[in-house]
Image (tube, rainbow, N blue to C red):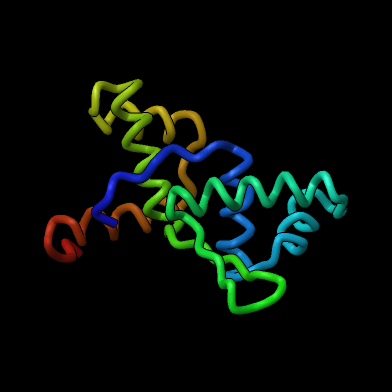
Length: 130
């Protein structure tokens, strides 16, 4: 995505995570999924979050259906990339190596993680080195 993504609050991220999973949902479906119940106050909260996300162009509303259906307009990977870039800029002066090293040392890597990363590095290098 070429445009600079705006920051997303944790509550907004909860809504996006459900939309990424369900693809499309109503306010009620989102409220029930996020809060496990559906009260008027919680519906209003989710509606407000959707309005904010819509203003940021992260969510679109289908007004042709009733109740309105919402879908995410930003891909999870695009938001992850933007959030990681912001974090890298803030904590590591834009250098990715300290961030990656810390993640690996803190969480470790499974064999599958290692294999996936090797494949990615080979791809970025322009071919398989096997």
